[in-house]
Image 1 (cartoon, helix red, strand yellow):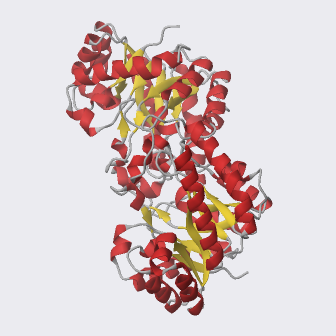
Image 2 (cartoon, helix red, strand yellow):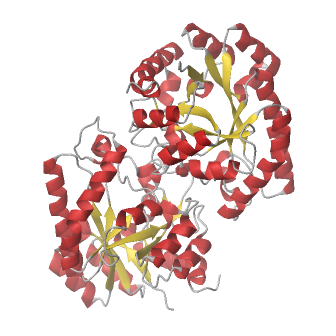
Image 3 (cartoon, chains in turn brown, cyan):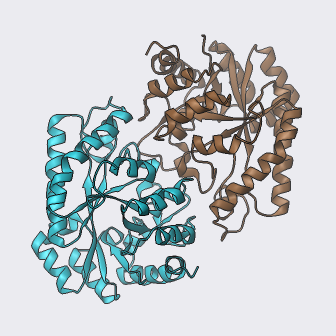
Length: 292
Length: 292
């Protein structure tokens, strides 16, 4: 089995899609994972063409989601936005639309959104995610796109995702066809989970393991907690066991590196790609290939 | 059932034990939860006398633990320190010794400790915690002290506790008598857990629910992530359901407020106690008493 490395444009946040595509192709990678804001800047059709012309494939589109609104207007606008994201994924030629499901209405303002500051009902927010997901599934299916549920680290349970574990993601996916609702394993978010090995195996068995993303968990946690993601090897995560579990679960797709880290944003993207490739070959690939 | 509020001295970090005892008694609380550093400053016997003379009881001693050392010297020193903590708890007249089990050797330096910076073996660290716990149980039993396992928020899995969920804590406690190994529910650490209701009920059934601690999860996360704990009502946690689950599980002990928060450290401790009592009566007590 040959595994492919993919650059997620979040890792090179401050350059354009054209620059990211060029750097990725130059580094010899076959895949790129793209964020919607970079695609929007370039224009959707132009982005698709640019990526194809460079000989790259899109490993995933980031991101759909934010499905927890309690008011009707917020729910309608979330559904519209997610339908647009589904169309974008299909246009870009990827099946995998990463879904960050959203946080509590009471915490939405932290990210500049709106919501009732008194609404801290976690069970209610989770139940609305399930409802919105069910509403999106037929549209995703028509477009041959998979809604890929991302369990986020529990430190983001308030403002970004009330979905915090892989088990919870698989339970949420369970009512839907595996080709339309999958899950992603992002090491930063799930490395600590005592149930991780069991749930990765389950994801494989259920045919829902749609994406594997690697980056490290840096310590001390960055002052802006969102930027605590690190280059593999710089933090506390042991990539070998997790990568073995992912390979044992039958995952054969591209492996994305998505790092939000100010130091990495500030450095030459070519250096980022080079370091990324070295660390991948040293810390991730051997375990995926059953050599480490 | 009458529930009692307790001030954990961590909430008033910068004052002496004598000052904390006085403020607690003055506020009319019957309990205080104490940190070992404050006790050591006062002297153990003097601390016990001071607390008793003020008419207070000790709800818990914080903290034992840090059991993950991989080298023999580190393991021996951890066992010695925990035996001292057990004696201190008994001397202070509390059965509950809160255990923060420790992080990865590779991350120990973040807290000023030592350890192999390459040792990121999470399963190994967890297995050493189980081994050290088994070694401490007979000594704790002799002293009629309960080792109270604390699942810490997964954001601290690297440097502070490889124990991240209540389920994991109960699984770790399972081989030992319930009167000697218990668990604590600290809302900050576990509020996000999709299994929380089920595991609190299990803790009650198994007779291991030894302590309930309340404080909020503030957003955005503080620049020093340890200080993101907040006064109840200031963050994203809904205290009603969790408090109901705790009461339904049969918990009748004191409820500690332990908040690490720079603004609260900087304000008058009397104001902290007053706010704490108001929020307790508004947000926690009604649910414990089945009124909310």
